[in-house]
Length: 303
Picture (cartoon, rainbow, N blue to C red):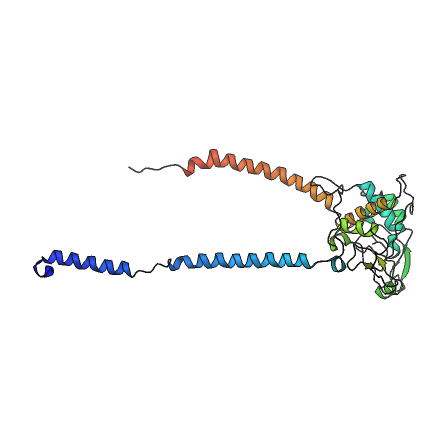
């Protein structure tokens, strides 16, 4: 009845109001479709992160000494600081331990005699040490191979001619090359030091088969290499007491240098780069503040 006597304008207003009310009543309460990718990405990241944390936790829980070996403690090595360098006197003593003890079974394939010059020995000392060994060279003018004294450019000699000879001389075990041993083992120098000083009698209930030795820091606890360092085993040139821990510390320092001979130079270059880049950074701030800012904020008005 109201619509019959109402004016056309009023009727149109009422109809538009009714339509808008119906649309609002049946409008969806769900978020826009544009928000869905963000939510999906967030949920996916949360699931992946939770799964990764669970995997890491499960791996830590399942680890045990029998499979992984006892984790070595962290030792305060003189060269571990950001500005510290190798103890070169220790490198010299460590080379002596390697030469008199370790070189009987372990090679040092990546180190040449010349690498010792200026690090632990003089050039004359290195030449004298290299000449103590014979190296096969040739061919000569007759096509024959011949032996000659070593030169600083030669690499340190191997204890065995090949892998088979190495295994035959060590009851089937292959002594690893020590050139990169501190990089190839988790824990680095800490692991090597703990291994060299960690030999002990097996605890009750632990059986070690014949030919193996108990060392908790070695994975499995049984290692073919017997204890090799004992007090006063070597006589240091500088009079340092040759205790087991001192010899282990020195040979670990030497092996750390062998794995990373550029260590000192790298840190020196890093300091230079830090100083130069810091200066460039300050210069860039000055340029932005006093040179670029006026240009960026300049306003040009055309009349």
